Length: 612
Image 1 (cartoon, rainbow, N blue to C red):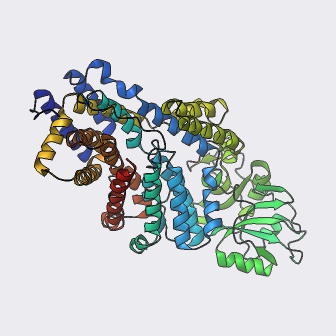
Image 2: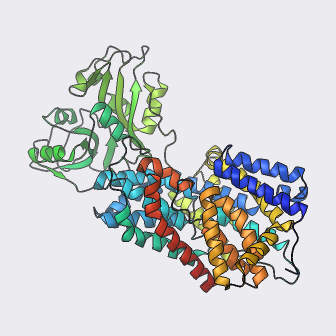
Image 3: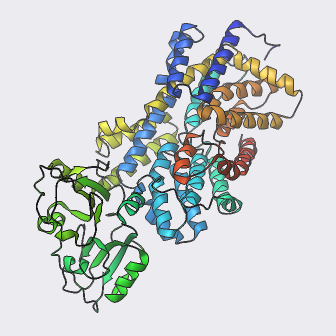
């Protein structure tokens, strides 16, 4: 900068507007996306941003990139590819808490490098719940490590977190306003931050399997708090407890030649939910289906009760789900409630005569009638209007049954069936997007959009599903805040702030300034979210670097990466997603995350200086 800058009217207006944004994001009197649009309007009315640049955010690379990433993430989810994660983690980790935490953190962190962090946490919540149920590890000891590693894994690529997607737009804005003689800042390729992000993820995994593990809460899970973990609710309401186990019929078993209905009628028999005979596996096997040597039963019950029944009937208990893992995938099947309406053709008929398993693919686990819960002799029960039935089935079969108006579903079930046959298509177009991005010949948003369009054309997703996958709140937040960053640069407000900070600090080494940028950005991210912190701090960091002769790209990266350091507060929307299900309080978040956050900031400053 040539000479001292004087605070002008436009600078003052931008700083006041920035303070207003900080206050609105901090106290959330109105939604943050509404605040972003309000900022857009104020910038236009005050002419702080020329109208030709006012709406750059909506057409900027950041918004297009984030839309494409959301669509591709939904495509990978719809194929059921990510739903197999729990089975993989159980196979590689067994029942060891350290190995389960390490595998869960590593897998979710790597996935977050190419998907939006909030979507990854939502996808892995039921995975963590299943791991907790199968291993006995309290859910509270899994969710916080997973969420923190998702945040850290989002720094592996330039599309893993919103602030890194936004960084290139902020750099391009800064290039328009750099002083004469200062070289243009390069746009960062997709994997330019990979060394820092991979090291950060490794730091998170090592932290939670070592010192961080001792600070994880050991309290029991909150009943009914976990999404997709319906078993806790049905256990409390109907006494339906336990897990799903696989029992193999041996040659010595008295069940050989017996029908499924007869096997279920045996004393202390668990509930039969699935059957595999030869190469065919199905849920809700008909009561008249015969059992043979080698048949595999998928049963629901407590571990000790299932074990006793298996010993009494000479059945072999498999250590984990091998045959029915995909059938019992929470995205495809589960437990739900349905009411029998007065107009139903089921009224007045014995449940066993309806043969719901054979005709509809539905198993009835219990019937709630007034104050009475019927679990024994369910097949002999004559249905009445208003009976509330507890059912297990594929979601698709339940939805079809509800269309007949003989049942009215009470539980909100997934309406769409996964498309596992589209896994090759989803993987191909996802890999294509990455290859185009890495080639350097195609701009990042174009490469990502090519992958998203490929998934649409190949039927991985429908267009309506793609629209539903986009978080328009995030889109408007990004588009509204980008012009604020432009105003910070174009009016000189960022340069004036950088000059003021440098004057207060005096003559200090460059690395001290970088540490100050990292700490201030991390502090702001606690109050005004990572996006707000990046928008405010990246322009200031670039101007500080220009003033002291440092590397502007390194300063900008430190600011953007440090925006991910909020690992201590539920003000981070990623941590907010697990705070309820995990039952975490502010003290627990601080105790677990403070050391990791400080270690992460130190790692960022060190590696950015080594690499840039």
